[in-house]
Image 1 (cartoon, rainbow, N blue to C red):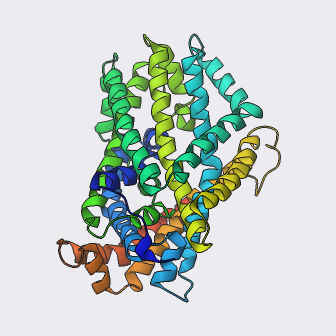
Image 2 (cartoon, rainbow, N blue to C red; image 1 turned 90 degrees about the vertical axis):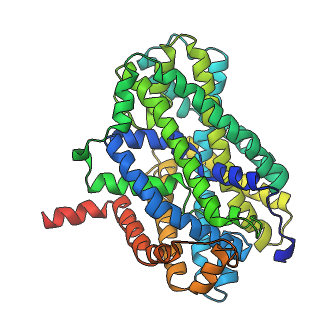
Length: 457
């Protein structure tokens, strides 16, 4: 397929909002708060900032380089840049990671639709904490309702993807991202006006340096990569739609800042409310679907706040499912010379099959495990703990050792028209620091760091 005919985003605003939508998702609003709560609050946030600046931003710039330079999908990019080599395995890793993530991510995204429906019908009102726990367990382990919402969310994603890059992804991002920020700000204002909200803000912004240890550092690095969607092919795919005049450095910086801002606002939204009602900030993944509905239920107009929150969560999930779907769709579309609509249909059907099994694995198929994990947990484990850190590490090694620095600098400076003042520092980080740091994340996610520490104790 000729790269000359490749579509691009229609505007600079479209580039930024679409790419921010690619990065922003449940990782910011669902995963970031409970990771922060479980790792000491502000201490974790401080290390997270350092990881975002020193590792996340450089690796994002690198993925942008690969995508725009090749003008291809995640797998095809390495076929163009390193033809006849096995470097293309990095791209295939990204494509399959995105596809597998969608397999369970769509299930969680479907849960947001269920809770939007419950908020609209006032079904969340008047429940006790125990009832929220019981009802979530009954719903998530059921057969028809969770699958119905999973399918519906998949259809929503499919419709946007079939509409194309400009009319689908870019147009949807221009609507959804401002909406997401608006709802976040509304909920933050409500949260900080609650009694004792200052305790939550202190937990989030006043670091206790005694909380910092190797586990917190590695968790922060892992969250930085998860939050920025690094290593899953999304950034490579989206940047392949950038125009040649797009400032890659500036775009990466803007996306990183906005993505981090969403995560911080999510913390401001959640922790003051949690502390105001005496709930432990270490509530974990159930913070969103069990703890927060209980918090909203105790507020005046609780149904309204619940509705706004779950619409926010649904929008964040949709921006992510779009980007993940596009990774797989672009691959099938380009590598198999298939119509975009047909490629999207194949991907949607495959994701639906994975989604059905993922959903059922929380109920009637719970006893059927893979290496002791349910199907849902297995997809989560192999992507988050193996494929993403491995993909990120190999991208760094490829660019650091394989790509000519002159070619790298020329692309990142738009042939010398945009200065890159810290290029040598960036190149050093990419070649040496980033692979080692990501390698540590990889070992930590597999639990090998603790085994090694225990060996020397």
